[in-house]
Length: 144
Image 1 (cartoon, one colour):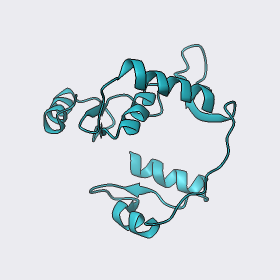
Image 2 (cartoon, rainbow, N blue to C red):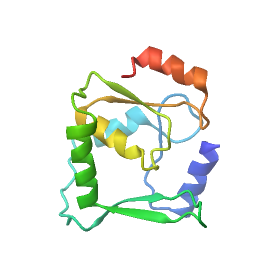
Image 3 (cartoon, rainbow, N blue to C red):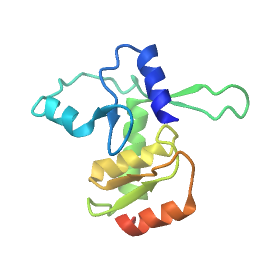
Image 4 (cartoon, rainbow, N blue to C red):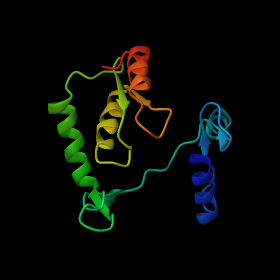
């Protein structure tokens, strides 16, 4: 499960400062404690070029082994701007979106648009699609 995956990541990459756990979980640092530790800090801006890599996501491997697809800052800016203007006009912080595909999938771009609007992103509590759970979350969060 995910706790074992998170532990393996920490062992493989000792530079990971913390792993967040939101809600009841058997792993990770408490979200509120980490938020309090970093409250008031600012992050230095770093200059990036439109051709600099921004997002690495992995293909499904339909024609061979999965491989990293690289999107640049320029490509992401173009895609997100088009989503904001054409595909999701009128989205506001009162909206909510349910995430049914992995955020690392290309569909994760939709969530960046939701974040840009301040809308809620509802994550499934399981690693497999459970239709009754999805509909319960749609009802609970008024997914638009």
